[in-house]
Image (cartoon, rainbow, N blue to C red; front, side, top):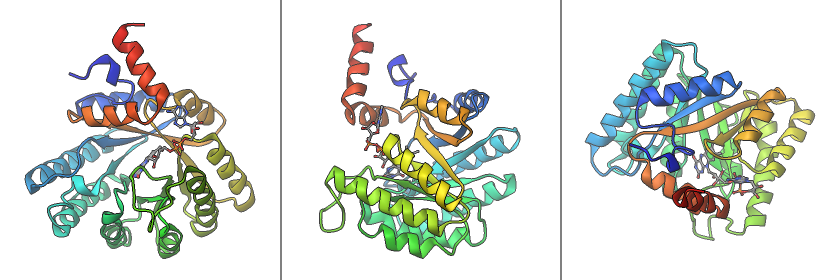
Length: 278
Ligand SMILES: Cc1cc2nc3c(=O)[nH]c(=O)nc-3n(C[C@H](O)[C@H](O)[C@H](O)COP(=O)(O)OP(=O)(O)OC[C@H]3O[C@@H](n4cnc5c(N)ncnc54)[C@H](O)[C@@H]3O)c2cc1C
């Protein structure tokens, strides 16, 4: 069972609990991006099992009127086992999405996976356009990846990047990453008519995106994580901005919870206060 302290960031262990969470989000005018926790499987069984779970989840979402979609990690679908395994599992998930008119987001992992992830996205989105791919502003290659994807259907989620990367291929300085985020936002707002997702909690980046929307009229949505700036999520939605919350679930919640707590002093203090009971 997930302890109360972790429930701020993780919607529950079961599909039913994350669907309930999605319903509550929808009641507040917020869409849900459901992510089954799991990554870096070294055997295909676990990867196949998670792919099956995603297919069932898409079927379940399809039976409801929920504004909910899924987001998958390449290494969760077997990329560490082999690119073929990853591609097969992704294809099964996209088929289930197509049968249910569902939407599939692909998370982006560290730079060693970027090419395989882009290739797999390109291979699928041509036949099923209700897909989106995450790109990371800290990687120096991202402007050319935006250019590469520009003519394709599908959406792009721009994030700053969560992985520690080597300085020859990535910006490592916070201010430079912020600058790259703005540059990439600008490129994306020009390049993608289908719209882009601003995956950030940073008020400065959200203001910048709102300004670009005024100039280019490109549709955009804001995506934030469960448990992070939830008041802002509700306020943005009340102001008429499309907001999606990334809501993880599943029994592999511990390492995800640990990452959230360690990435920010305020989150660590929240955890400490919860443990101390005040
Ligand atoms: C929906 C979503 C999906 C993501 N998917 C991926 C992915 O596939 N691959 C990947 O590499 N990364 C992903 N990330 C993570 C991302 O790369 C960043 O590591 C993470 O979002 C932190 O960057 P930031 O832009 O939110 O703000 P930061 O640069 O961390 O912080 C900037 C400012 O934002 C505000 N802020 C940030 N966090 C908080 C908080 N907890 N509470 C209050 N204010 C806060 C503060 O004002 C802060 O000064 C995803 C993020 C989101 C939101």
